[in-house]
Image (cartoon, rainbow, N blue to C red):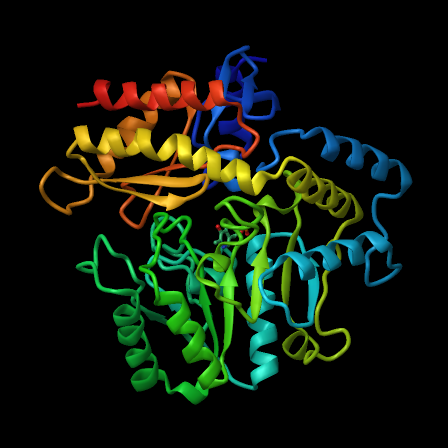
Amino acid sequence: MSSPSLHDRRLAAVAPGVTSVIGSYVAHASGATLTDVDGREWIDFGSGIAVTNVGNSAPRVVEAVRAQVEKFTHTCFMVAPYSLYIDVCEQLNALTPGSFEKRSMLVNSGAEAVENAVKIARHATGRQAVVVFDHAYHGRTNLTMALTAKNMPYKQGFGPFAGEVHRVPMSYPLRDGGRSGPAAAAAAIDLIETRIGARNVAALLIEPIQGEGGFVVPAPGFLPALRAWATAAGAVLVADEIQTGFCRTGDWFASTFEGVEPDLVTTAKGIAGGLPLAGVTGRSSIMDAVHAGGLGGTYGGNPIACAAALASIETMRELSLTDAAKSIEATMLPRLTSLADRDPRIAEVRGRGAMLAVELVSPGTLTPDPATTAALSAACHAAGLLTLTCGTYGNVLRLLPPLVISEPELDRGLTILDEAFTTVR
Ligand SMILES: *Cc1c(COP(=O)(O)O)cnc(C)c1O
């Protein structure tokens, strides 16, 4: 069935609140290539939103899923446990930043991981306030909508939202006058101390590089200053590494670049090669605080998703995908920088590893230009390159190729992007 006829059926069957970036329907995919039902090939610069880091239908993942689905599909870890759940927790404990003793728990989605991190931090501290940042994105459930900054489309009409969520400014060098990391942290901390009170703060929740909010990379020193404050205040530092995790930024996790050791880390997206799985990992002193039965869920740590996660992690190790992310950056960054040198609509090129973005503005100003951003993305789509946008103002073009993308595919994608900047005026 063709994309147009599928689209007609979709309009009659699927809730319109759920939208898609492209109008084509996928038939199959492999590595960094998607093929739609009309036989057209796409170069994937989105990875299903930073999920298929190991590539689509990665061989080891396919094999592991196939083998597991024949053994058993579900028992519920809370009913009849199995080793795969423990295996994944051991991997998470070993791979996340921090050499202290850790524990993990598994759930199904990023939002659920964030919800559980907040539950655990509140339980462990006996405090309630959660501090989040401007431009943050943490999910679409009731608590995570409250934690997310942007109204449209995530929050509009969906309130009332969960309480005891407090927002402070993010370090955003392009838009905060280039404030230093320590100065930006001092401003945030001043608001926390004067408006909330340090003794009331259960958790500081932050994405080490913001995802949906615009690939905002805080100035150096911002995250370490928050780490130091949280330690002194007895608050739990939660790093939401759902988009930045699993080799995406050139290391297993992005907190590592400034040597920050979060108390809790939330993971999802890239963890399982496309199967739904998410986790909370952290200091055993915090994780162990919750009473027996206080955490869980029917599907959390589903055996097929766990098998996929173990195969993904093995693939990341075997193919050294942290290095792959760095070499993607080494190819992409100069191309994007030279584009920015030629095109005054690009205010900034930023990001790390295979998580790079350009922010678009009206030339000579910092006024966001979402219309040009959308037109550029559409031009890329028309030429067979799947790109995504993001940002509070919808004016950031983000590039998230699978880490297994080949040099020719990467080069072809960048050429299409380059041409889009020439076509769209
Ligand atoms: C995607 C994302 C989430 C939410 O994950 P879901 O699996 O969509 O619920 C939370 N935090 C960050 C940083 C994300 O990128």
